[in-house]
Amino acid sequence: MTAVWNYFIKATGMQWVQSNEIIGVIQSWEKCTLRRRAKMIWKLIPFAIWWLVWLGRNDCAFNSKVISSADLICKAKGFMFLWDLRGDIFNGYCFFDLLNGWEALMVG
Image (cartoon, rainbow, N blue to C red; front, side, top):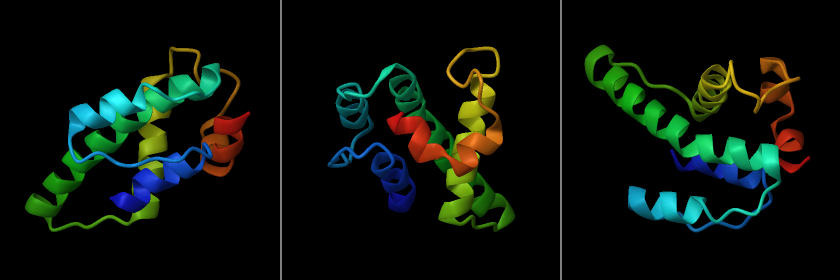
């Protein structure tokens, strides 16, 4: 799971020390200095990852399935994209852009 967190953090170029508590993550996460669109995406990332942890643990416990970090990253992007279908965070972008141009989206 660390690889998933690190992927999203690295894309912003920020330095990060991961908290072991959810409240610590939320408090630190709010202090980001990204631009408008990237900041809106940034706020979705922890919830997408936590949702994936929940789903992944259930899949592992009840279906004996294990998912790779690359698949988790792809699914996290998918959740964020779907959650914003009627919003404006990803307006002008398609899901392919999230899969292949994440760093540009977060920095630009």
